[in-house]
View 1 (cartoon, rainbow, N blue to C red):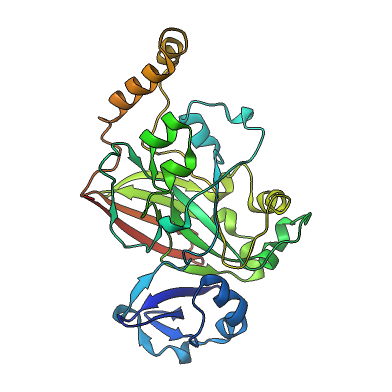
View 2: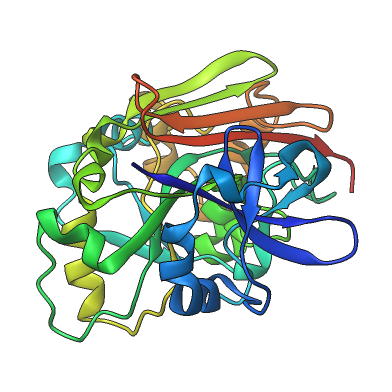
Length: 318
């Protein structure tokens, strides 16, 4: 049965614990980062039982279960529905789009996020996060039934994005890396080997002010976890606690212009003029996030057996 791991503070010190119902079983002190926790406390985590739960969950404040020292890798255009709403044909996606996001963007699941003063097109993206259990040797071929060997757990990620920076400048990193643009958690869910096979059943939902914007299942991924881990193992080193966000489905605020508009942009408008018109038109789109908006994000199986908790993020003035 999956375990629910949290990173928390009691107002004085930070700690880690395993949740049982509405209480938590604290882990021994000493692990300062997610990687250290997984490396040093793995057996202790799995040894915890409800009898060890001695602290009321309501008495602590939850922190991000992925600490800011860890690598933050992201996949883009990884759901056919999102590819289509971005104005592309899913059949044309012939490669896995990979980019990085600053780990300094990571915040707790309920921490308010300030919209930068110069950003008018702040968008949301619910994503399933994979947290590494260990490094992957170069050239490793990760099999779909061996995810438990390489991955420790699953988290909710909201890949907040300044589209008026990301798109005109063609820079994913800049548009997605402002401080606060990476709510993570609240839980780090640790599935058993058998439960890892259920990741496609995870149901992602994101709502803004109570209105559902995104609603999809993780099985809709184009490049699935085993494929992505295999490819990334050829590129770089990974370490315990590193985070991979696996892309978002349809429902984002950003939409591609219609075909007629694209034709005009392509043949009659300069590159600078195109983006100026695009931003002017889209800045008025009410779907983009504004101060005062409340975002709710959940990822869980429909039977509740695997539940990554709920993010409740409020957008505020800088």
